[in-house]
Length: 518
Ligand code: HXC
Image (cartoon, rainbow, N blue to C red; front, side, top):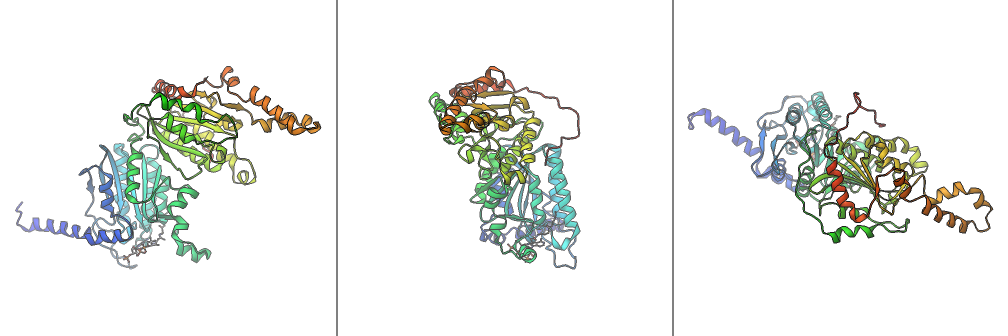
């Protein structure tokens, strides 16, 4: 080709137009809103020079709709492609708010579908960076159709490749449902919002005044709705979080998570485990301290930290291998299982099971939260989700009962009967149908009613119950758990136990899918 000729010049002209579109002014416009540009975000995520863009030069499908001008920018408002994160292949789409508010038209949708299809075909994770006003109004039903095809692909990929959504601006209307169908949602504080309709429409339809932040800000979705699993102060940290999260995952459901050497632990640190759980059953403690002492140093990556903090979920490494942890948190609501904690833990268990991540359960739970509110909102069906999730999970599953394991909570927290492979208990464990107070009131109702000093008598019965019934030794002797262990041996026991389960294989009965109580 003649590099001074017309053909080459035409080629260069296109590249110049493309450069103008991503000019410093356009980038500044994003920065003025406290946001990064779609391409800057990609650069932060991927290993240096590893990103390969696809379809950079496509333009909108229907420039003249009669509903207002369509921007004829190259790329139609979304950057797609693949690259490497810590050496591993990952697909991405990153919406460009500078082009029609990152809204989704037919071509924009087709580009997203392209990377969704490629990621599924090759078995690589996909990340969506969302900054969008939702369905492109001018393109009408073509936008709705585009979104729906994306949702369909999200579902087809679910449990096959990890899918992560990062909300870095508005995610309005159709833009929220694709993230909701993916495995994890990240948000950046103060600059990202998720809602099905914005404050203006809420005002018109319901006459309610509500701010962007109150309606769908990061804090709200992390604490109240549970839609966001991770929130960060800014975009840079959110993207670093995505990289860290990915380090625990295999690329797809046929692979195992990567091994990363994460050091050993001193005996002195491990022995601290003996003193963490108070002998007094009414005294709270922080289960995250137990987690830190068991796992490889500084490897805990908590999921949904702010939502239902009465249960703790997160990824960690044990002897370099990825595990998922579910732990009751005695520090919050005594670690009781309520609707939100059951939902949070069920989803986490199902993710780990989909992607071959072994599960460790640390149990200290007085039971399910009783009462009108929980019953009326369906604790029965929501609590059943956790039973379902643990029962159907076929990854290696180990439980350590730290203290309370009463009633239905004993059953649900990965008991042996729902498939726990190894169930250990610490000497502080209390395993029984119900807590001492409740049991004594039922069993000794008449004696307590007739006693001169019912409180004194109740105390005596309670103490007897605690000593004779609510301990781990009956369960141990009758084989309902595998062993009562010294807390200081927990890390060693777990490493050996998980290693012994590495080739675990469970045949499931043939069926289309189970019917989890949704
Ligand atoms: C076309 C859109 C758009 C949209 C924004 N723009 N949203 N163009 N379709 N959905 C354009 C604006 O016209 C503007 O163009 C540019 O993007 C930037 O928008 P601004 O409003 O100036 O920005 P900002 O003030 O930051 O507000 C952002 C916003 C707001 C909060 C996202 O634009 C907004 O409320 N948009 C509509 C959100 C919404 O209700 N979407 C739901 C669509 S229905 P110019 O040319 O001026 O730069 C839907 C249903 C799908 O998605 C259902 C599937 C299940």
